[in-house]
Length: 369
Length: 126
Image 1: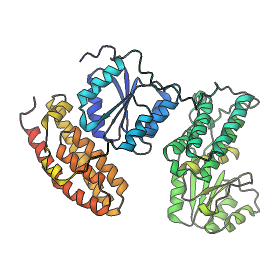
Image 2: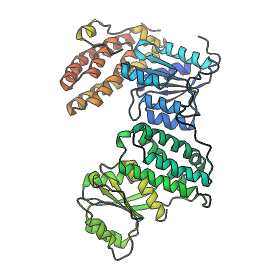
Image 3: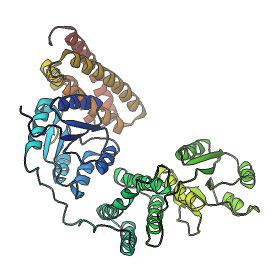
């Protein structure tokens, strides 16, 4: 097999089976290719947002985000749309194959009906083909958004696209609107990643990435509470890049957060979500102790599990020592209502880590990050 | 094309170990074959353990995902019988069916293991 024309080309291998990865990485490297391997779809999207390989080998049945979703993302992203994608899977049911074909792979191979050598030959042939398969222009129904600039028009567009996401009534409509929103904001956020690690803008960009991953990778987790986190991000984004504002490159000061829940498991879980370099969660399991700490110390944020009602919130707000700072109330899903009060947000149970983290970051920043 | 139903007869009729497939996967290298076999044992031992745990929890989604992945590894390692028996686990419609399929797959894995051990100990590969 001649590999001329394919040497040193970069292949992204996406498969959750370490054994398959080991076999194929060795084979592809032996053929003179550069290989990058990831083990789930969400990681593949992260990689594709920073690197454009020459070809993707994609499994379908994977945790976090399946291969069909990854393929759709590739075909719907203008900069990736023409990338050759070789689906390599053992999934061969009618419905899955149909869905995969509709997402337009370049080749579809069944693992048990092929061999590693045959796959490598196929990869080399695809890489040698010139021009590379142009099977997949961005779909007409999702026009590429205009190149963004941080001007008034861009800020207005952020607001418009955000509303389109929030008002979507169907899964497809939601994804389409989300796609437009992401394509609009991503270049701005990418540019700002050159800011020092730990600066608010970098943390914010990471938080938005996590939100997108959650929306794409776990659509079943989309809740009113998570959509509110998205809305807060959209609002903050508009203010961050408003023409009259300077982009804050300052560091996000580590935020000490009081985490109060009488439920041992929930308290530990909330604390762990915030156990990151940018936060210092202090866990408290009893309301009297929480009030005492709030009187004696300055917290940038309180995360409060109110149990059956809002009595605890009222007691915190009634503290005579002045405003306790912003509060996130953890509430049962059936009682969840978006807050109308500045400095007060709610997170519904079961707590989605992305939801809590995004709200905590934004509220802590507003109180002196 | 619907996935074919995997019968016990089809499993019994399939080949335990096709050494050409493993030899090809290892690019004909004895060292690489040994490494692959060692990795395969480690991953598949863990997969069977986790499948039993998932079965006891009644978590068929996890059980099917584990079986699907292990079947892929088995196919690449040249173990058609094990691959088929794991696909039977993946396709089991309910918990009793999954339990029965897993019970069938376990001795097939032991048999596959023995075949691989014999293979890496012989001079069958350069």
